[in-house]
Length: 231
Image (cartoon, rainbow, N blue to C red; front, side, top):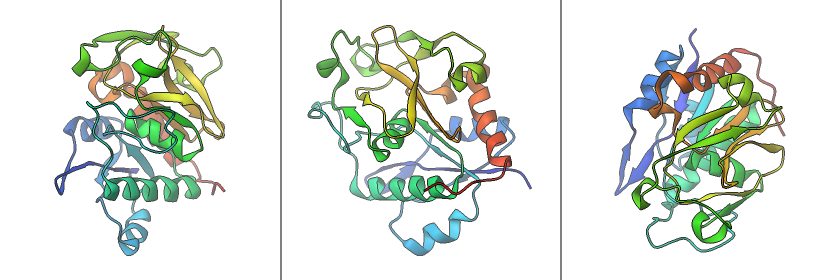
């Protein structure tokens, strides 16, 4: 049975959307993508949870848990239905021990739900922060992986040039998470959990081709190993 990877989606004006590059990245990693509904129906979540082996939480709007400062005017707050739906998918997969990859908003959600804090606007709150948002004029920048990080081993790199599409950023990591990579200005660009089953990146690997494909292959591989329920 191939690994089935659930993907949460964006939600705006009552419609769900997903960049097809997430689907392609999972397929190229040997997984089967399963698009998850934005829902508050317990019966739906319970029924579909048994149909997925791993979870990807992609990019999105503002994270509102654990804020250290106000949101900027150019960042939309998270829709309440998506907030609750994503929380359910993350927490259910987490407790079942199913591996999770958080991307941009997804990484910030993972961290916040583990008790970490988030800058409302990283440029306003993080001293010396560069522009990390494409819509504010940011382009690409390098990141440096922590020497002992799993992500350094997964991507087989000490440094990596990444895209930048975020206004928020992690201020303090949540319980069990450590910093796996930082930008030159010190902004956190990747985190990983002590369990080895939950990890997140601030950049968008689905847009970076083969260089970041090992992230998706690792997610699929970890889903093939026995899941251990996590408290």
